[in-house]
Image 1: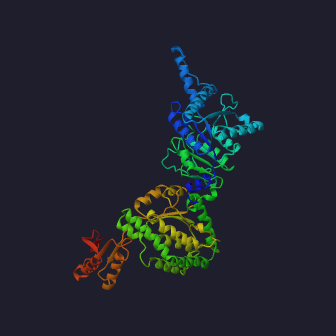
Image 2: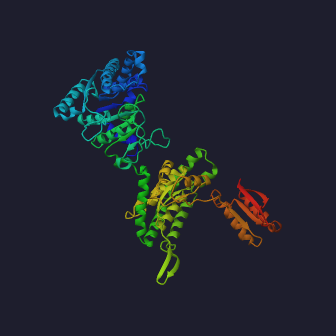
Image 3: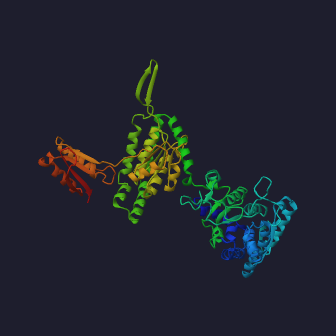
Length: 595
């Protein structure tokens, strides 16, 4: 399974009994008055599900909030002017609950009656669930109501509950209506629990933070401890923290849970239609998470562990991996070119510049050329353990400087898919772990090349030696991992390099502006000069290291070599402008661009 929608559809077809929990932030408006529009939409959805044969149980909050608003008004009209000048004490929460429960239930009854649906109220307290007879009777009553197509509406009876703040402690059975809903999901053997919130679902950080991302499927092993919660609900006891605790409790007991927005008028229906909305909690979610959704930290740690195993093998074994990759590239050449053609077509349709499309395209023979390059690299001298310098500090005490792997590299590169092969092969030969982020334009090309390369890595080392980062949103998280990643190499503009340097404590191997010049001296061999200049510009004009400026000694203007070079380049479609050099050298600068 690969998406939240797929996961939801997998169990939705078996859902019969649904518990819907609606919080105070949904039931009431900001001023405390009941939100009639949202409650009306809620009742309409429940009525539709009821008519389709679902057994729907509603757990509602909002009584205290609704009661507080009514009692504030009552206190206002019953107070003298002198009373209003005195400090106003906070209203008793239990009195608010008693008043609000009456009004809230009256509204539910009225709304459901308009839809030709009957509802029933069931008030419970924490202590009730300590009695096995109560729990048995509750199940029987709910079963009887559901058989009659009646909607049971449950709420904690705050008016007489003996629980006091802080509500969450080891002696409690439930602490708020979120945990009550989770408890009821187990007691009443629900097939699905839907927790309605005032946001779209669970985010990686406060929903108001633009950097926060919606988590579509909650995986406890990945997300627990990694989420930054914002402020609790503006009303009520809960908030997202309480919802997540309740959802995890129910999900790991076998009840799937979806947290989604109660502000939308059809989200419950959409959930039961299997749509990908909100955040899904399921005890098997860790088995469903696709490899592409592996967390940034997990990916980096896995690359580090695999790199250490790679460093432990012999040079011959590392060379064999490269030879296996070279063979795999040749065997899958048609598949690689097909995926690359799809990337090129998509880039053309999106209107990308010709230079980018040129870098993106794998020209005929490119895959074979890459395979040959890997074979050459495999046969090169062993890069690890070479003694670069030896110094005798004292008699019998020798200091050696030797080559060694760097560790885990994060490399961000442009749209050229062949760069992925080149970088990966160098990393394997030198014993390094690797995290790669290529251009989005080469998404399909990078994916197939990554799959072919990692499939050639032995299980004893691990295919996670090379991780492919598919979302640019993961980059900020990776840049925080200075305890795992050893070097960042951004290949791109100066702006990109500067941004990376400013965003991380990890060492960054950056670069300055490229100076892609070729200089032809007056003593140069004429034919060799022509070959070098033409190759430097025309072999791969879209490459970042293609010649930009040709510097020639001024005497070559008199010998005619400059004119010959210009004619040869113009034949290839290269245009030029001639200017005297600003340096002290006696030469001319010829600047080129493609026609």
